Image 1 (cartoon, rainbow, N blue to C red):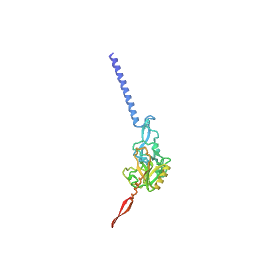
Image 2 (cartoon, rainbow, N blue to C red):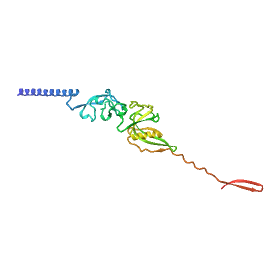
Image 3 (cartoon, one colour):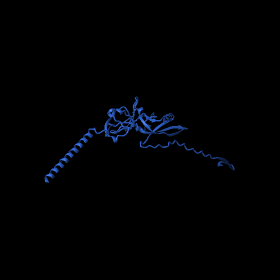
Image 4 (cartoon, one colour):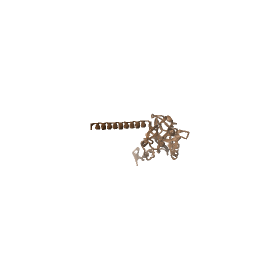
Length: 262
């Protein structure tokens, strides 16, 4: 009886060791497969991400992007799966290093100026001359939002009006992208407007002067434009005119002449 129990214990021990060894081998193979990126089909997908920070309006080059493997359930729609798909396109927004590249944030480049590629459909780019004051003391940068204020003389009175609101700045001078955040004096600002807004902007520039006001990028609401005019000078009261009459008084040989109010 003792020998039977002893043999049974030995068999169970051998079976347990075999199962443990098989489990260890399966776990090691799974880890190696995941590390080498050779998992079963559909587990991972190649996705293009930014290798460096990509400023707005930048033409994509190979050195700016790289491909990484991402679980299929974490891959968003509109992603790029190869570097060749995105090289040569223009970034419509600032993209941070390591961020996935999505089709909606890029525009195809058809030659010519890269600025033309960042203009939205049915929009136009209009450049206006500015100085350091109109250019918000040099703090305007591509990607900022501004309002446009018009000032003109009407009947010798200064009239101001906000004619455009929440307008996108495409470029300052001839730069569509910049990594600076310090004031830079510029001579021209390019704005993205509709054809109707372009006509309004040009007319206001011809009739008087325009001023740009910088908006908070988190402010989405617009305000009702109000026309402000310099208050007319208060009317001067007409001078009061007093009327008098001359009275002659004779006392004997003395003659006196005085004035009395009517």
